[in-house]
Amino acid sequence: MKITKITLLTLATVTFMHQAKAQTYAKDSTSKKHSLQDQTPFDNMDQSWVNGNDRRDSSIFHIPYFTPEIFLDANVTASGNNPIDHTVVGSTALARNNEMDVSQLGFGGDFNYNGARARFMTQLGTRAEVVPRNDYSPYRGQYDLQDAYRYISEAYGGYHFNCMHGINVDGGLFMSYIGLNSYYQVENWDYQASYTSDNTPWFFNGIRTQIFPSNKLKIEIWLINGWQSYATFNSNPGFGGNITWIPNENIKLLTNDYYGKDAAGLLGRHRFHSDNSFLARYYHAPKSKKGITQMAFSLTGDIGYESGDGVNGFTSSPTNGPAQYFESAMIYNRIWFAHSKLAWLVGGGVMKNPGRYLVLEPTGQASDLPTPTAILLPNGAISQTTAQAGIDPFTQNPGDQFAAWDCSTNIAWMPNQSIEFKLELVHRQASVGYFAGPGGVTSPNGYTTDPVLIQSANGAITPIPGWAPDLVRSENRIIIAILFRI
Image (cartoon, rainbow, N blue to C red; front, side, top):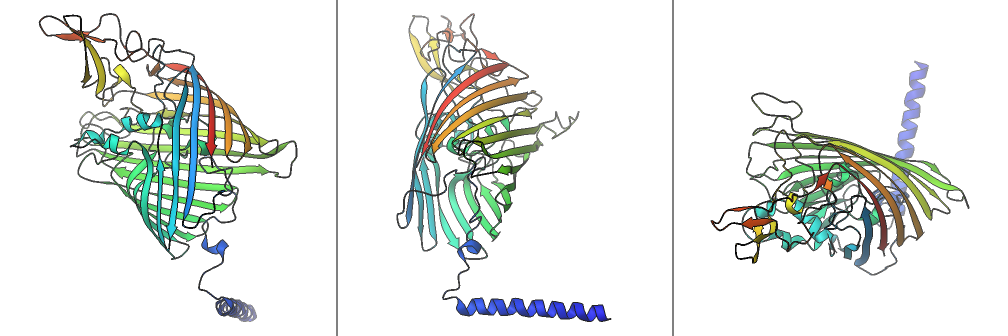
């Protein structure tokens, strides 16, 4: 009985002190706003080490209502396969071998005024070609949505509600972080992403609601056109969301989950995907002058499937069709040293995707999408046309098998927070021919103007004898990247 009384007295005292503190705070405050630390999500947490995150601690621009942003992503890469047409297959970060490549020039920024908010970012460079071509939805209906959107990576507007720790409701084109990595290479530890990241969406087109119940938790809800699609594939939109929890500045956990119908014309086929990541900074010594300043790792695992209209999720069925699913994982470890101006990364990943529905589509004459093609006519002239597909397309049919793995390492030099130079070595391996081999994927001499089809006198069109797109099972690659952001 005595213990019960003491317990009740203690609880009453704590309650009274809490109420008194709250009343004092309300009286002393000249506004109804909480402290900046309480109001701003993830404020006063160092997130510059996080894979897929902005490594700057602040912007150099201090302009009312608008914060500009400019970045440049350029690279030079070489493949041990040395394809004759200089074409890179199976990447959204790289486009051309043995050449200086401006992957993306972006300029834009964030607008904020009395709760109204907007952001836009341009996409100029080879990514304006490499990324939109993976979206089949613009072929539905009229107007060329690929051309309409290809030079924009982000464009949305919305409103910020001062509720809880903030609620944002935005509509337009916004980034997806399924697969952990950022679409902007300047934010990533690696340059050539593993399959888990490179084969999952970089963007969404739709409506996003961000809810911050506390300054350590974010919940997102998406109503979108589809899986990295400018338009909708069928009648229904896609649904999804994100939960991100950052209990302290050394730990980050997140999950992204999606449901939609993203097989063109197949109304009964459903897609589900779950993406999950854990990041930890397990060593941090910022005052170290010469040695290691911090160490961190990221671990990501994805699982998903399609079912209906001829495919059957994780198991094959005599009546419902073959299995069609996606399983992948990737792990990276990064070590910073020399005042965090140098960093060393090592990591890699694995993927299995029966049905190949998330495998990046090879380009050129290995594509099963409409492809620019040259035809040798009976009179010796050459006709340029667009074929329905390449002459030997990489198929993505139910039952088609695909498994792959990769590993990479790089050294990054970051003299300041606005510039990074990266040297990366990558090995990638697939269970079937997938990467560009010495013969390339364009034509016998590597140019799109060189005929790959020949028309006979009776009008029949057949492939040029002796040539086909050259897809091989592995590649070794070196990448030098220059990444600027201000």
